[in-house]
Image 1 (cartoon, helix red, strand yellow):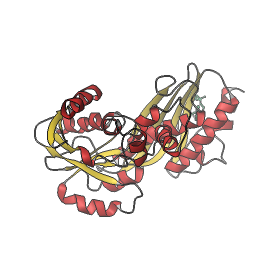
Image 2 (cartoon, protein in one colour):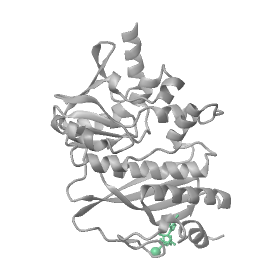
Image 3 (tube, helix red, strand yellow):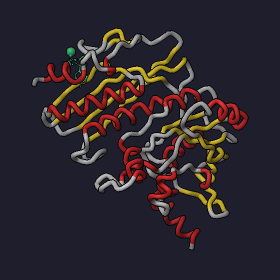
Length: 328
Ligand code: ADP
Ligand code: MG
């Protein structure tokens, strides 16, 4: 199988959702470039993500899981801008052409693409150590893209879904899965759910937004430094799933604060807008929690065990030290 028949067979099959009709895509796979027509009154937002074997996923990871993870993590960046997903290009570097691998990968990529409403518009295929990149593109009404720089003192800090699940899933990669909780946590690692609908709802109200890829504290800190403000967080308001609480109660809060790759949204919203937004969010099947408030100066303070403590944004170790100190 040469490169062209590979593309035709696995990525340009018209029976698959992946390459189905997309009004904005004037030309998809099959020419030197794809051609995209941006709808009137919209901005184009785009982002590139790469997964490298043994860096971002373990050697021997299931091809279907890799597909979901690649597209989920990439589309999450569109969600963070409040954009609607439109199309993506795919760079595949493969050590060899394994039909079973490509079949599993492309089938699941098509499922994920249909799930997020995104079309495959082109790509590149090369031989080498396994690595995958997806460049995703989406549209947002002109001037409405949510940036990291807009948070103001008094804004509420909110997050979608639950945090720390993906970090727990990471500990389960090489284990035998013994119950539903473990299955759920591992799935949250491999198949993150980009919060596209939440992002599009939130963009009408939010002052800043980011998706949580490096951990709540680290990503919130990007908003803080871009916006020149500080944050106060109530540890009790940080949303944690029942599955995580049962699986690792002693790590749950730490993982929720610092474990990355949950691909939930963290956004700030003016306090007076919060009740309206909460009302609008009721239609979504994902919960959104207010976990704190934007304050003056810089850094993050967290309320736990009855008092406030400063906490480093990068801080797995810092936090464990902090926990130990305050518990003793
Ligand atoms: P060029 O040599 O002009 O860059 P290629 O021969 O690399 O073009 O690709 C031919 C067509 O197939 C292009 O439209 C390209 O976007 C598409 N393509 C190549 N690899 C992939 C892939 N992995 N997934 C989707 N489309 C691909
Ligand atoms: Mg060319």
